[in-house]
Image (tube, rainbow, N blue to C red):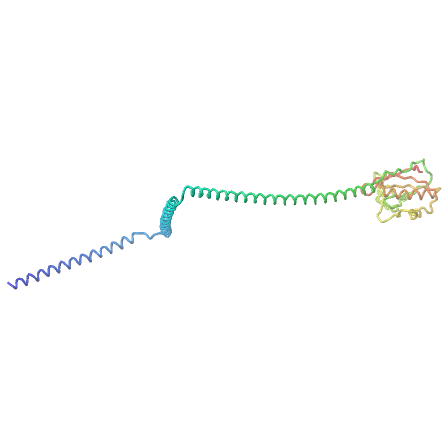
Length: 311
């Protein structure tokens, strides 16, 4: 009887051990399956993008900030309510009016300060405009002074021009044909140039030097262009004896057989020199003739003549 009990107990233990082993094996198998499934699912899940991670973090930060601000706003609202309740509980109507008056006074002070700042800005702008106007006035005064100086200079130039401009000088009237041989001179500025072609000038040739001038035949010997040669001629200074050098050219040409022909440039200096020469030839009893010429490019044109009307 005891033997049977012992066998029954051993069989029960075997069954229990098999059951435990089977359960443990199933658990191990399930764990392996779970691990394999997890690895397979993890491989299927894509890696998050850096931008997605950054956006997620930024979203969490913003949510945290919003929650913090909401809590702060709620705390401020509660504090406002508490202050309001305390103010109403501890302040009388008179105190409320005083508080309102104080608030209005502060507003008035702020408005006054704003107006003061606006007035200061306007004053600064006015000072700036005044400085600009003063600069403009100084510039205008300087410009006026310069213009006055320029006008004074122009007036001085006008006076000098009026004094030095060519004067209308009347040449003497001719009194009749003169007998004898002509001696020709060109009067330009303060010089007298000898122009005495005589029989030596070729009216059919080219440019030729004749005395102190160059003559170039024109229009088939009917005229010639005369150009005084610079640096030559006789100087005719002002004052007594100004025609002495010129009169030396008339030596050997007696007054009863010769007369003088002057070609005078049409300007004041040339006419003044002519007056000096004229007085000298008249004083030496020469007859003379004066012909004013208007130069073109420093030259003038003469036409051959068979005789001259002299003074």
